[in-house]
Image 1 (cartoon, helix red, strand yellow):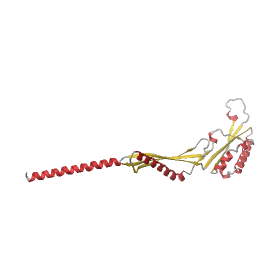
Image 2 (cartoon, rainbow, N blue to C red; image 1 turned 90 degrees about the vertical axis):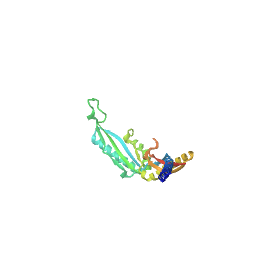
Image 3 (cartoon, rainbow, N blue to C red; image 1 turned 45 degrees about the horizontal axis):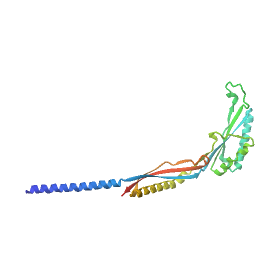
Image 4 (cartoon, rainbow, N blue to C red; image 1 turned 45 degrees about the vertical axis):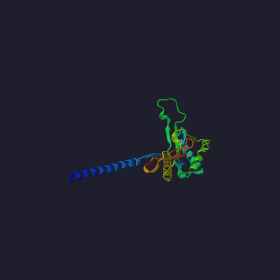
Length: 238
């Protein structure tokens, strides 16, 4: 066999061996990559109840008279009585605000109706309480009927007269709730890994849902339910 043929044979074997090794390494790397890409996506919930820290309470009452000047006099008197009652009940004066009364002249709105209303003028007055003193405000709400017995006609049947409760400390509770949601997500992932005879790896990706604040129930609007869901994807290995 000539030297050239021997050299060619050796070269060919070397190339074949090199390609075989490369193919093995590539295949092995692909298998490891596929194994490393195994993952599980889980969710963790954090849900807590907090007392609202601000209440906005619109107090509305109506009045009627045939004399406009007399009607305004009644409104001023009622406003003073309501403010005095609120302040005596522990609500600060700067937490009470008055709106201009809404006056209706019924004689101007008859539209051909020949019947004459009992009172020409009617008024709707709103006094708003904006306070952080939740205990005092909720206490006086249950006692407002004391003024009703004295002749003030309160209106509470429409949506605009319903109290509004706000929870403004969300930034204070966010860190703890996010930590809790993430911890619960990991607990779920660990349970899945155990059940599937896998090992839980590092976090592949994570996302935090929006915080939501709602009323716990219709009868306790001052108690707020705060919740957040964290979604976490973990790597799995054998």
